[in-house]
Image (cartoon, rainbow, N blue to C red; front, side, top):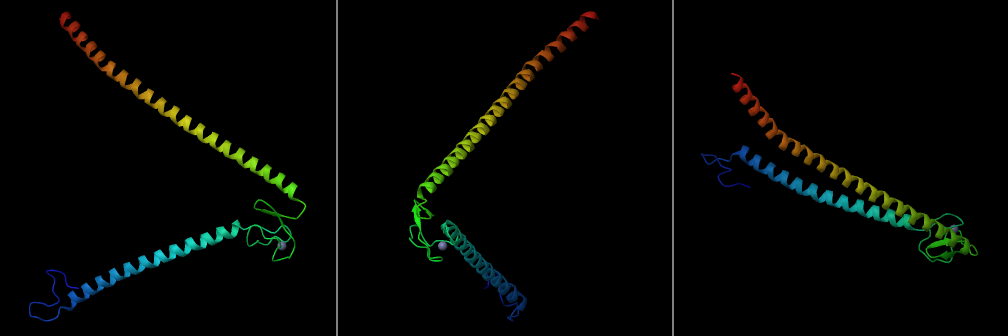
Length: 170
Ligand SMILES: [Zn+2]
């Protein structure tokens, strides 16, 4: 594709192959860039889909008898070992053990909440410490500025005084 001021013909009206090659290779490069961009987009999308599939597979519950993944919450019989299932909320168990499972679930939920609270507390402490350090730094800077601001005029006064004193001596 010839650009303005860029001709595929030389002064004699003959085809300038060097110019043509330059332009076509540029066009090929652009096409390559577009192609790569499309490919990358596709790859990224595939990766996302695989990730989602993996997550939803992990979210599936295990059969309490054979350990195989159950296709969904609430199924009454394991499709792998054909044994009967009971459910406590979203957790499968053997029929008759619901009370035990419920207790276990409550316990792990309590632990989870406790852990969350501890994490929040730590986060809060980190923030407080940071603010304290920041305040300390600001205080340090103010003190430094004050010393500098007061110290300089004081040093000037001393110098003037010393000069006056020296002049008096002469
Ligand atoms: Zn099973």
